[in-house]
Amino acid sequence: MSCELCGKPIVDKPVRIWIEGSQLVVCSQCSRYGSVVKPRTVARPQRIAKRKELSMGFESTVLVSNYNVLIRQARENMGLTQADLAKLIGEKESVVRRLESGRMAPTLELAKKLEKVLKVKLYEEVRQEQEPPKLQEFQLTLGDVAVVRERTSKKTS
Image (cartoon, rainbow, N blue to C red; front, side, top):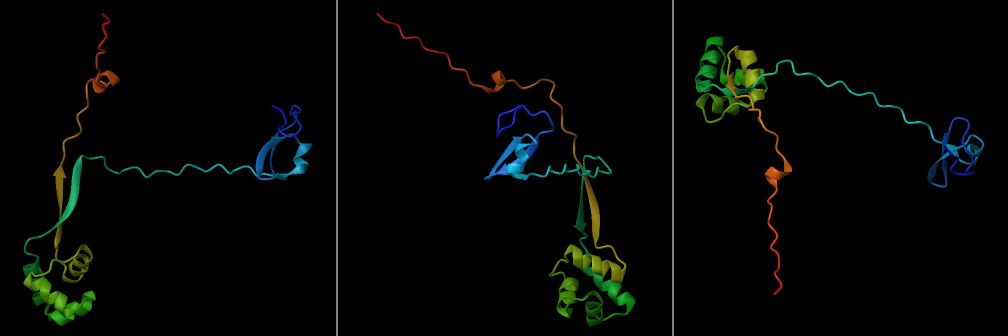
């Protein structure tokens, strides 16, 4: 390896420096003409969290169909008014009234608050099974994809 500034072969360890906006690899004698570039720190690869369960199922939460009846019965069993329940979950009384009448479906966050206070389940987990992807027995080649046209030759008469 040769010095990019003076052209002599580099005997010692090469030094990377900045000179007038350019980065050069120079010998130790020419390194005094510029500012030494600090070596980059090697970024440690981050550990990727492995999946706990490798399944082909799709899990989702679904609101139970009779959520309004469950909310009203649980509230009445606890002896609470709509205003009391609203204060406990940090919502307006009108929200509780709309939930109990079925005009409004609770969000996941609101349902969690209601489940905690009323001790009922409003969302249930549904697991849908999916078929594993089928492996192809052959490999796709360029010939399978490309459309080949034949040349037409010109006949001269």
